[in-house]
Length: 281
Length: 170
Image (cartoon, rainbow over all chains, first blue to last red; front, side):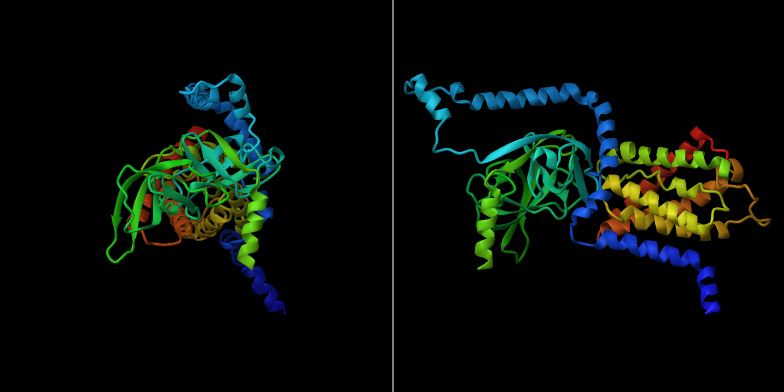
């Protein structure tokens, strides 16, 4: 017994190393995304506040550029309003009003504005922290859309912050389709180049060309349909493969995204419940 | 040592904040250069720091870095390896008469030449395990080596500059 105690005392450093290392590796390799992990992420109270404070100090650097972006976006929205359209048929003003309050149309999505306070693009798996959380209505597994492109998917939500997988994350799989002929496949990131993603499972016979636009399919409840993703950069068919390999050049620069919108699918619960019911049958 | 504890706490906070607020956001394409300065905290601990204390500090610093990188466990596991390896590197690089009581592995005490050798070995160990655990494969071995070499060179420059800027005394 005494020898055993002496043995442990003699090699205490080694055993301490072993215990801590095993614990760290356990944290690294556990796959369940448990909510308690939020305490050791950038969405916790301390780190979130540090990031937000630092971000408040540095946000003025890009203010001019951000203003221009927002103005451009505003202009696009203005152009979509009914009173900005030119009607070849003379429509009385009352009819335009009724178009705006049409009861056969229901709002399907809301967008929660948020700001990125932590971001990276150069790691094998990149994460994004937003300055909005559960308090502002953000939920797990919702999409983030930026200026002219997709940004990521929310994975963890704390009271005031949310952590999302960037599009540049190996676990991201997005249902995307060719805008022109509606062939759809799944979009993944294979690392290294933050401008290129890979579109898989487009059949060999599908007519595709370099420059074709890729948009979201809307087949998942994460992103609305027809959101711009990018254009085809290169494509080829590997020998013996039944599918095309398509490299998609993203339309947005994820390294420069700052102000983004979190998609809030208003009928999401209903949809997910229904889809699960069918799957469990 | 007890009188210099506030200095160590300050170094801990400064290195952590420089790492997560500034160096994390440095992005050079293609993404082969990753700058790391936080392991310097472990490098600079005095020689007489007990290994268990080094390990606990490494664990805590690693967790803090992981918190900001959202890479739960990655930097913790890596820094623990580096901290444990430090024990053997120090033993191996001990001068013939042994270290003096109040000596630390800093340029002021050991000279630039000794420090460069010491820090290089530890930094290579750190980056090697960091990139390995991050990628979990040698599939892109060429990229792995390029990343290791470039990240090592640029991080090393930062580590030396940091010491000349702050000129630690212990």
